[in-house]
Image (cartoon, rainbow, N blue to C red; front, top):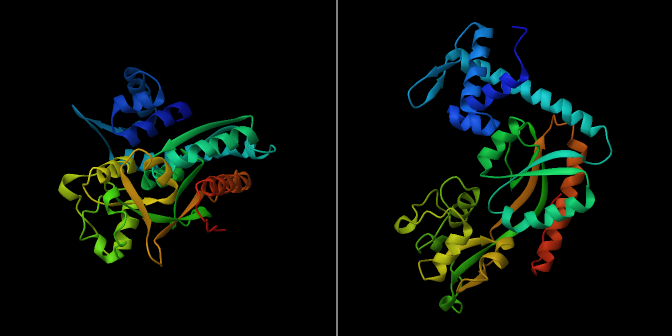
Length: 309
């Protein structure tokens, strides 16, 4: 098996991850026939079948599943060799792959990217916005270097660094501005509009209301905070927003925003990365830059900030 190449391993890993030749080929920026040929050559070199090919889908063989796990470990180790070289230089240079959750990205990213461009001229920033479970998996697989998420994620292989805490705000139709703020346990009896399943902010909102789960009201399954706020503005219910999102999301909607009574619902936003990453020292410095960016932005918005360390 001396003729196995890293290119073949990367193509196979993409195929195992996507479960589809076309999507894997797109992810690898090659044609589908070229990908198929490389996988076939890899199978010939191994002397066994990795993929069961169906008319519409593919499935890993038992050996293919075991092989995929080892391949991910190998590719992650190879990527970390590159990180080790980058870590030997001062500052951050080259490609930096940052993951970030959707309920933070639109509000914090512009400030972060601006600060990074000022501080690290030779940094090539790649941003991945998706849900926390996907970010955790991609970070574990070495497909991103760090992620900005709600803490804790409780993964023993990750370093977690708190950046800031923010309150949840109640968003109601503007006609309700003078009404008393309801107690948390009453919210689930109202038309509470939530993000779709998979968003950690949804789970945090439900936890605050003291319920384990909830069905979206009348089929509204919001994929963004913007959609929820607009629905509140036309009288379809109420929702919760993290403080950082208020200025952006409420500027074009007929809504009112109010604080809950103490103890107010909060979340902690932080950065995570693999403990084994050679870039750990640089990422710790980066976390401080991100924290200062967030504090500056929140100060501009008029929010008192509780910092975490």
